[in-house]
Every structure is written in C-alpha cells, then in structure tokens.
Image (cartoon, rainbow, N blue to C red; front, side, top):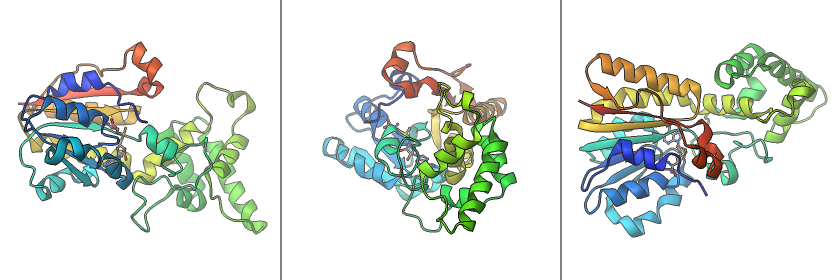
Length: 301
Ligand SMILES: C[S@@+](CC[C@H](N)C(=O)[O-])C[C@H]1O[C@@H](n2cnc3c(N)ncnc32)[C@H](O)[C@@H]1O
C-alpha cells in the first residue's frame, strides 16, 4: 500500500474548489487524487496519468465512486499537452506531479527497482513497450566510462569508479566462463558489494541504493521527462491555476527550482514556496519515504 506524501500540503497548495478540474500527472494508487476529487465535487474532474499500466489498472476501482469525474490515461506526463488534447480536457485549474516510483512498484511491481528482492534487471515503468532501454542493457553493454558517469551524475555515488570497474570485470569473467549475463538485481547487488569497502557496507543507506537510483533515472529518462512536463505545464494551466511538484532527488528539485525562477522572471507565475516544503517529523515516522520529499508550488498569473 502506497501512502501519499505531503497530502495536507498538496491540498493546501493546489487549493481545489468545487467544480474545478485537475491533472494528476502521477496518479499511482490514487492517494492524492481521491482527496482532490472529494474537494472538487460535485462536478470537478481529475485526469489521472501514469506511465505504468498496472497503476492505471489499480485505479480503475476508483471509478465506482467517482464515475466519469475520474479520467484515466496510461501515458507519459512528458506528453501532457497531447494527452489533454486527446482527452478533450481543456480547462485545467491545477496540476500535481509526485514524481518517481511508488511503494507498490517497489514491493509488488516486479520491475527490478528493489535491491532487496531478486528480480529481472529491468527498471522500466512501462514494461509493455518493446525494445526500450533496460537496466540489464546498461549494465551489460555500456562502457566503463559511461557507467561511471551515470553513477556519479544520477546516483551521486562516491564509489562510482570502483563499481563501474567491477561491473566490467564481472562481464568479462562471465563471458570467459560461459556464464549468462548480469541478469538479476541480486547479481548486481553482489557486484556492488564487491566494489565497496567493507566499512561503507553498513551505512544507514544501503550500499546499492545510489546505483539502483541512477539506473532507474537513466532507464526512464526521468530528468528529461520532468523538464518536458515543466515546459508545458504553465501554458496548459488556466489563469490562477496552480502547479505542485513533489520530488525526491536533489537533481529533480534543482530542475524545478530553476524552472520556477525563470518563469517568475518572465512574469508568468508567482512562486508560492520560497523554500521547498518538507514533511513534518510525524509524517516521516509514519512514512519514511516522506523523508526526502520536497514540494514546490506556483500559481499562474
Ligand atoms: C510516487 S508515485 C505517485 C503516487 C500517487 N501520488 C499516490 O498518492 O498514489 C509516482 C508514479 O509516477 C509514475 N510515473 C513515473 N514517471 C512517469 C511519467 N514520466 N509519466 C507518468 N507517470 C510516471 C510511476 O509509475 C508512479 O506510479
């Protein structure tokens, strides 16, 4: 079960009122959407998007309650303008994006997001698209230089060089001994473990966290998708419409912050959060995932 993060804060900054229309770019399990739909009743609508078809399927039961007030679209928020056009969803009073992955996907998604479960090294949100980049392709085919670069850039991994080197060593070892490629999450965890000095293997954050994060970001083009969403979001909003972004990674937060600053300079928006809003201690205790959540919000002028 995924617990929606910063739920009260999302409602405070989106400020949904009866009969307004919203877009939830990352509907997930529908945690935020349900509350928004309550606030915008009786006639307000939410268009909920998710890249993971399973998440859209998980939300279908919500239509029993909310009927045609909830529109579900399986797609990439990077294409928000087209999605809205195709759904004929023309008046948008607010947009929410709670980016990244959900606890459901980590625990039951079978996508290879978790280093605690032995799964296929895939990491695509949308596994229905064929011939797309997977974590397995990166780990088995990319050069040492490129592996090091993505681990540094997207994982901020201080042992990037050592991990990249070990991956390459393991690849040639497997090739020489006629073994299969690096196939599973546990294969990769084992390699990372060999690359990281023993005294760093018992930190509060698991030693495989940063490598897994970097791979997931690259496989799904997460930063690029966020940039594309931001570049369309303000223009699809109504005047006085609100945009709320929750991110979990410093690189994402930097992108949001600098985009908001630029739009502010261009006189298109007012920034509602001078500093990012973070979770209170109680929420972090109830939902450790909330620890790294950062919420930023704007209003279109
Ligand atoms: C943190 S979860 C959202 C949870 C949701 N707010 C809730 O309360 O249940 C993020 C969701 O975004 C989806 N996602 C990731 N990248 C996406 C993209 N580019 N376009 C659409 N959905 C995406 C993931 O599949 C995941 O379901």
